[in-house]
Length: 140
Ligand code: SF4
Image 1 (cartoon, rainbow, N blue to C red):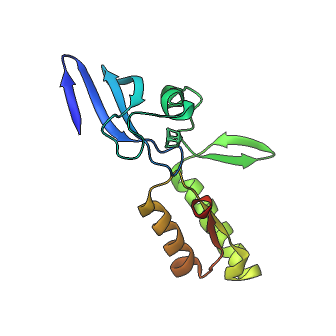
Image 2: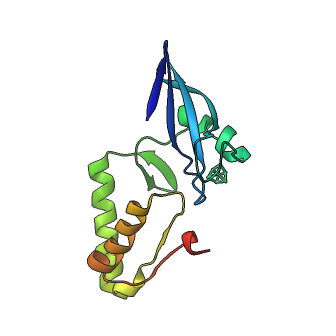
C-alpha cells in the first residue's frame, strides 16, 4: 500500500532484516528512500522498530553493492557475465555430485528471506539436488 503526498510516496511494507516482521513505512522522494519509520498500523510492532529496521537501509544506494557476478581467476575476483557464472556453477554442481553424491551439498536458508523463498530453497535441495541437508535460522 502506498500514499502519495506531493512528490513523496510513503510505502508500507515489512522489515526484512529478521523474522519478527515489524511494519515499516518508507518515505521515497524522487525515486529514492529518504526515511524509514515504524508503521503504527502494524499489529506486530505498533510503530516500533529496532535500529536495524529504522537505520539499516543505506546499503540500498551503496556504490559497493554487488550487481554482477564475480569469478575467481588466479586468486582474484573478476567481473563475469551471468552466462559464464552459471556455466561455472553448473559444472561445479555436477563435479561435486559425481564425487560425493547428493549429500555432498547443504543449504542454509535465511529468516531474511520470504516464506516463499525459503520454501523454494528446500524444494530445490530435495527435488533438484536430492538432499535433505537443509537448515535455516528461521527455526530458532
Ligand atoms: S525492525 Fe528490527 S526487530 Fe523488527 S523486523 Fe526489522 S530487524 Fe527485526
